[in-house]
Each structure stands twice: as structure tokens, then as C-alpha cells.
Length: 412
Image (cartoon, rainbow, N blue to C red):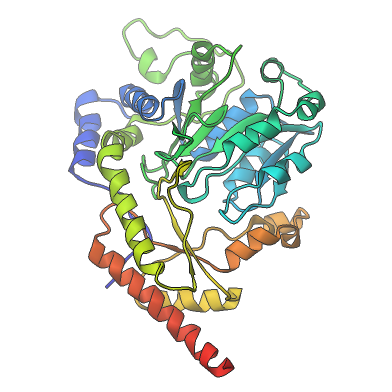
């Protein structure tokens, strides 16, 4: 049996929506489908406004630039995340300050407070695997009197907020909740990913969700950001293409990060049934894994729903007790021989060439390394039926027993 690690959902609903874009609307780049997807995101999350973009990275860069983050500024991120969380800040000249994480893979709020300096302009917590961070604790840090007194605003937006921006990396967590609030309203700004392997996909893409406090006027910020994401242009090509709609203005040095309608069409077909069908199916797979792995004392189950949080079940990051990194790699090789695609989330950035060359050292992030060396991400996606999930489980258990059990017997 061959089971890939991830597959996008391409069903009849997707084909119908994409065909409508191709044959009926007559429009491919940003247009009516994007507008509809933004409305669906707003409906799903409860956010003030949603701006669709062509990737998570571009959305995060857009919002950091909107907040005037740049050279000489610092952005705090977890050391356990994909490199895009760092690159969105590095690519606009800011310095990335990495801090360690906790047992749940997510950023440690205590580490955030210790890392804040007068140069800190933004914090980017990451909801690893779809499990929300502790946003109350993070806000407590950001609203601390000493932190606010330390903050040195240099733009209109920074003066309005009066503290570092909380920009949630919710690439994994669409549909998750924290304290009965949806991902999308847990931070000042939330950026979600619609990449091909995500819970909702547009092929490539993302969305910025606004949840700005007073005195920000959200309608004004949304209008500006729509232009800012389109080279600072006040009208989209769709709007300019309408009769008499040719005149436009360039109001800012923007980016070209808008989402095309052809991509939005895929996401529209999925997001409309996400809460009713797609998310519950992912939860069933997650629970099937939990049911079987909970029987094995060597298995560390990933964080799961409780009174404070519910997951989006984007990943199933299984950890294995008492193994080395090399043993983990050997187990993965055995699983792969059985035709099952697995992954590791993530190779810590401080172990990657770019970041090592910049002076980041994995020894500074012990919990990150401890999580990484024993982690194996298992397949979890819509269309993965229970029989295939059972085969994955048997492959993991059999591979563990082949690699580790003989060594345990020999050591007795």
C-alpha cells in the first residue's frame, strides 16, 4: 500500500468552482472569487476584515511593512517553526530573535518577555500543527507596563498600538479555537496559509485577518491594505477593466502579493464545507491515531482538545520516548519502506545552513532540539480512510519494534 504524507482535496465541488472561474466569470487574477473568499474567511473566523494574498510569507511581510518594521528592528519568533516565520522579517531587513518553546511545540511566553528590548517591534507566535499558543499569557507580556514603557514607536501605526505587534502565524490553525475564540481573532493580526498541503488550500496563497484594537479604523486599514498588496494601486485590474473604470492612483510603495481568482476558486469550494465536513474528518483521523498510540507507553501523543483549546488537526506530530535522533531517522526509513509517507516538523532553523551562518546555535534551544529529535509527523488529510490510517499505525508500531525492541532486549 502506498500512502503519501499529504494530498490536496480536489473533488467535484472544486472542479465546479474552478470551471465557473474559467468559463463564466471570464476572470483569472484578483476579482469576484477573491472577494467571496475573503467574506467566507471573515464568516469562519469572526475577524474584522480579511485580505487574501498569494502566500503566508507575503502576507506576513505585508503586515510587518504596514507596521513599519525594518532595519534595526527586532522580531521575536519561536525557534521551532518553518523558516518562513523568520524570512518574512529578515527579507525586510529586521533582526530575528529566536526563543525556545515548550512541551506543546509552541513558543514559551516567559522566553518572550526575557527577549524583549527597545528594538522589539513584533512578536510572531506559531500555532504548530494547528494547536493554538497561549495568547492570554502572550498578551499579558505585551501589555506589561515595563514592556510598554520600553517600546519606541516610529510610525503612526506603532504610536496607535503603543506596544509590539502581535502577529499570529496561523499557517496551520484555521478552525482551531482558544478560550472559545476562533483562530483569526486571537492576535492583532493573524496570517493563515492556503498552501497545497494546508487544511484549506488555494494551491498557493494565504489570508491576513485583522483584529485591531481602537483607535484603528478597520475599514480604512482594509482599504489601504488591499491597495498595499497590489503595488499600492487603488484599483484592481478587475475594477479597472469595468466600463469607465480606467483611472487609478498609486498611494504607497506596496508589494505585488494579491491572490488570483483561479486560486480563490479552489479555496471557496473547500471553506464553505470546512467546519461541517472537512474539519470533523481530520479530527476523526487524529482521534484514531490517539486511540491506538495511547496503548503504547513509548508514544507521546500530540496536544489535543481540552477546555481551553481545540486543534485544527493539521499535523499529527507523534513523539517517541527515549530515542536518539539517529534512531528516529532509522524508524522513518523503516516506515518509508512500507510505503507510508511521513515527515518531520521541523528541522530546527538553528540546524540549517543559513541560520547557522548567521550565528544561531541549536544549543541555545534545548527544548526545540528535544522535540525535534523524537518527532515523526504522520499523514492526516481529507480522504485518508480508516483502513489507511490503520495501516499507518501498524507501520509505525512495526518499525518502532524492529529498530528499538531488539536493542531493549540486548540491554537487559
